[in-house]
Amino acid sequence: MIYLRSFLFNVLAYSTIGLGCVINSILGVFNRDITIKNWNYVILPTILFLLKHIAKITIEVRGKEYINQFEGVYAGKHQSAVETYTLTTLVQRATYVMKKELTKIPVFGWAQAFYGIIPVDRSSGSAAMKVMLRCAKEMVAKKRPIIIFPEGTRRKPGQEPAYKPGVALLYQHLNMPVIPIASNTGFFWAKNSFLRYPGKIIYEFLPPIQPGLSKQEFMEKLQNTIEEKCNELNIETINAYPKLSKMLYKKEQ
Image: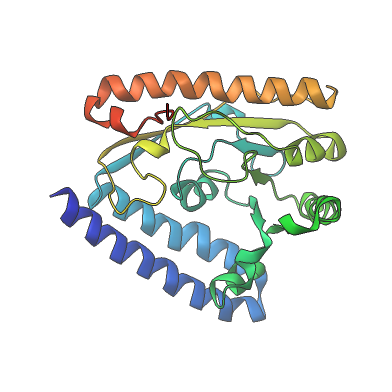
């Protein structure tokens, strides 16, 4: 059944996303704000419906008291594509820090540009950081929170962390709290996997890291906070779904 459910979910979910990108590419020409509402109140709730009723994946949100809909930098663990399809249903006006090359994909990239994202050109070095910071300040001025994945790419549950300094740049220059997010998404929607394993995704928003720390202090606190909570969620998930222990990263000998 898992193969059939995964197939049906993937077909319906990616068709919904594709159709949504086409619609937003058109709507965005006339009104960019409406693309935010269409994405977060129509398209993504449809994905959540499909997750729950076809893939049999539910979502539990912990630490809702730390969510501010109008400001803050949200720094989350990135284990799965599902984060990009669900987090802005929780922080509705948030924007993502995203690889610039994704914006060059026809239709999909246009839709992201109209929605409003913060592009990062990884090939541009320090110049990319300046562009990211400038775009981030523009989003802050519009009362849009920012979601960033500090490791820059998806990593498996239990894999060694590899945090990058971009999040510290935002922390130092935006003068606003950074809210860490831990999750266990990689157990259910793994990187480069066709299968969608049934179970409960958990997002845990953690106490904000307030401005004022040095770069090193901030990075250490952010990484320790997220990784410690993710380790707890890994144990909780494996206890609830023992068969998914195979999804934990196994270091090659």
